[in-house]
Image (tube, rainbow, N blue to C red; front, top):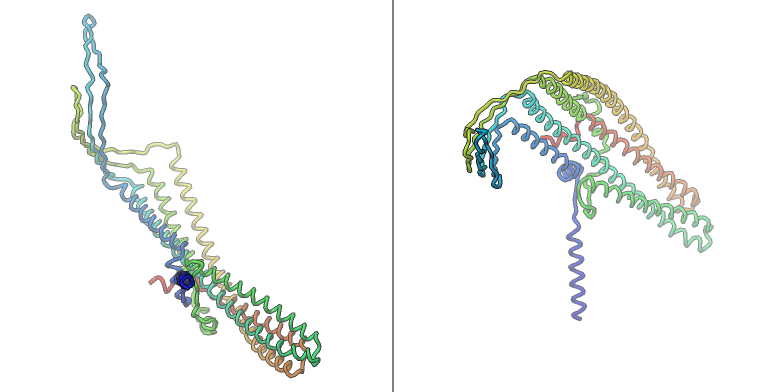
Length: 438
């Protein structure tokens, strides 16, 4: 008896630990976007890149601030002597080399360097570029989350349709079987229903796997573990209302809101600074220093002063055309960038017009498929009633059932096409992150 109690307690603890270990996320679409921005690893790496660029900026600034370095040394000649002979007729004099030890501290300060000032400005622009890159990364991840969220909803609805169809067909099969046994219907009718039922069950299993695959993809994008249970609270109907789909269609396209364009502009600013930096190589560099030296172990003969100040100027004079070639290359790179920027502007304008066209086409297809699926639902309802009353054969019923499922599938595909087209249009207009940049 006691052994059974121990087993029950252990089983309860194991079951409880399993339940506690499995997390659950209840998410609307906006919640999913926010969760991905906070926990997606790719976005996290972009944040780390920004922190690194900030440290690189501090490093660049520090290079032009006072630098203090100290050295200490100890020298021992191991009893060696210096032999000096002032008179050829006299024997040479020997001077022992005593051990020496020196402490030196040097303070240096950059006074003027055009490359330094331009380098600081470039580092600031690089930090801004990393911030723009992070926004672009967030936009890509959010766009993926939106599409996957829609895919999960579509998969769940498809699964519900298949479940209902399997249940209805199973009920019809169960009613038909006794009629075949009593000779009221031919066995071929039952066989046809069995084939259709098995086909639907296979489709149901495939839909279940597809749903789990979509949820796994969403888990990955959200940055959660594979064991996390997901519950999506937004209904598909919320996103397929005609008003919500057409609100943004006629908006003016401001290319400055597009994140790809913002990235290109940031790259151009850095490209201009690169040209300025090459031009700055023609200018001199000036720095100053102060040095203090203290002899811990002094030699007998010492002429080195303790304190020393000085200025050092580096003046570029002649480089056999190297600096000129670098300036010309930087100008070519800047001109290439300007052409690429113009190409991007043209591409975005064309892409926007195409996406508006795609959305309009998808909406028209969605409206047609909505009408078709309503008709198909009514038809299959009537066919099932006729079959129950023996007015049609099972072959006619299975044909109508296949047509109904095809109509439902086409409707869901049309729904997904509309949602994807709307998502792409929001993406090119820079609207996917508008709720998260405040």
